[in-house]
Length: 415
Ligand SMILES: *Cc1c(COP(=O)(O)O)cnc(C)c1O
Image (cartoon, rainbow, N blue to C red; front, side, top):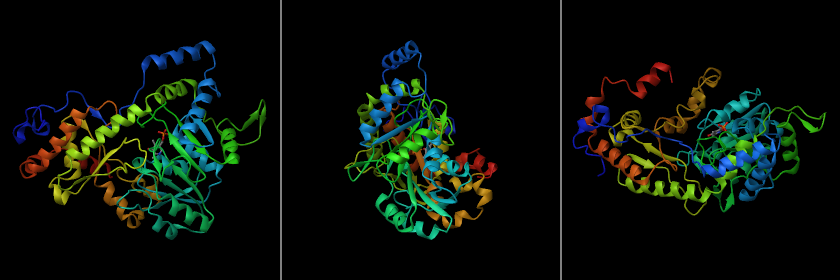
């Protein structure tokens, strides 16, 4: 065990002991490439005096992304949320769109923002992605599309989803914010549905500070999206569409080009951490890691574990409190589910009745830190800590009572 001298339960930081980590370990610390390369590119941008509006870096970045994913078009944008909004509008979605509730709230907001109703569909309990067998029951005469989310880099059941969509003449988009560099049956994410949306936010596997993109193999859709992200301008003084400002700036693209050179290194680190977590948690009853299919390409950016309180003896939230006290800032992605956030909670107060798997996972998932800022030794220490906590649950539990817990705070907030 690698517990930095913790010998008795009272040595846990939550019970007054020293912290396991000197510095906080965050989920989603950015993966940052070579600083000098980035600064050199920024210097060149300043020299050129071309800061945005499809400058050299953005053009090169779009080309690199399209090549890497083997997709015809990449339209870089200022962030993933605006990219989603634009993809939704360009694909002609309106009325109702079927989406999972178990996602980052931006997936639902991108619809509701343009007065399209997100209809929340339950997830497959094993993969955590939208359950295709439940989609048909959610279809009404107002339904125009389906947005699948490749949760934590695991691609959706694309074949089944697209078969159902074809049968009912629905459009399919994917929120691929987590899945840059992932594949399904050897095909890179980016090539499924009518279009897929990427996020290059600082916390994602591959970042451009803030940024996003729509990728598609559809020429017409790509053209429409290019216009929409630039106010609908088709040339000087010629506006032919309603548009917005979704442009990526040059400095973001420079960050993307810099990080491109490190993709395989970031994947290697993440995969190594994943193996360390998988091995370190292997014989822990009640804690199961969400596995990656290593016969596919993946970015290994999300270490999600499912805690079954009946077997761990400690609730998911108690485990998070224990980790936080040690400076391991684990998160509850995605808690409590979009349907329990506003405005959806008020609009659909009973949505949860149709979302049992969503509610179960939202109550059980713990997201652990990984990425290039986390060393393998730290992963081992986190696993040992969890092992120790589970092994001493009976002693720890009574001493945790009466403490302000994550669960208690959340209950006060009504979530
Ligand atoms: C991060 C994320 C988004 C939003 O992307 P931004 O670039 O932060 O706007 C959308 N959907 C999912 C699933 C995400 O994780």
